[in-house]
Length: 421
Image 1 (cartoon, one colour):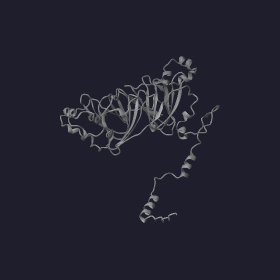
Image 2 (cartoon, rainbow, N blue to C red):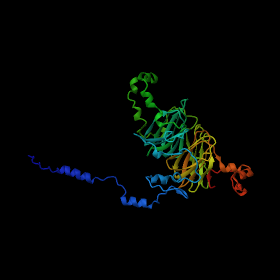
Image 3 (cartoon, helix red, strand yellow):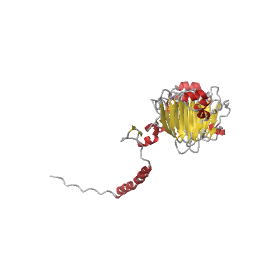
Image 4 (cartoon, rainbow, N blue to C red):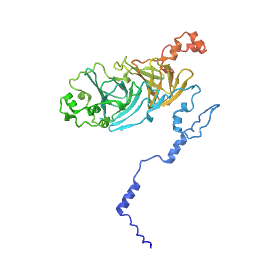
């Protein structure tokens, strides 16, 4: 015999109200499907990997967004040849480490294997947030991308340096010297860090709290002349890598009384330098000649107007590590023995040029292009192809390239880093 079915209870008025509110709860707004389709319709049809009598269509699957961002990889220029390693990686593709006071991400040999000489870190500190007091074996060079920061450092003679930085300012920390970085108001800061070792990682620095946590309490007591319990509440290092803090007082109130200042400044105002200018752009070079403390890393800030180009050149002393700040570009690299390859870049990308390889960087966008050239060297050095040919006997140049005298006369004896002049 089947049991009689019990009548279903009606939902209470309270529960019905909650459910109704949940249904009506607004969600994050997104563009209507019709508008998304309309925006996509405005884009040109995706290009196909074809040149006259070369290539064919790509039916897919394919990532059209990346294809559009890398046109010179998708359809290489006819002049590309041979095999060169990958010379590009984007911070947008790097792992983001989120902390209590900000975030960080890095590009090392792990992400860009060719980058054996240098590694880079993109870091964000919220207002008042602190990158824990630490030191490392590598030299550290930094460029301020956003906001304001305060740095501190002492040298081996116990002399102290402290200063505030804004957008376009630099700092340099020599290997082994302890330092700190803190975000200032109103919105903290973001900065690029460059290290003179491609295997460097921000996860492998000497942290203050890490050492204290791994030192016996009685040793701490004997070293500092205080009770052992004084250090009982030191937080775990995992809590302090980038941690929230209060915005410090004005610089003049934050200086340690009685501290002896360092003889050299560890910060530099790159944007205050007089640039090398042409009608197509400008270059500011910072190395140990105008930033004396920076003995391991040299740099150039390059600005290229639309249609302009960083001229054909190479560096006779070391590899080049690049960071693209603004705009769009393509870089062609000549690796000798019929090897050449072209790469495309945009803001947040890192480029790399191995020692002595010829290259150019062309602005392919509609706005200004700005990027940093970095070198593991005390001094900046480059060789201009144009200047080399202009300063070589004309007959020798004509015979080598099978060009006429008129072309040779057009060559420039003075270096122009950004062309057209």
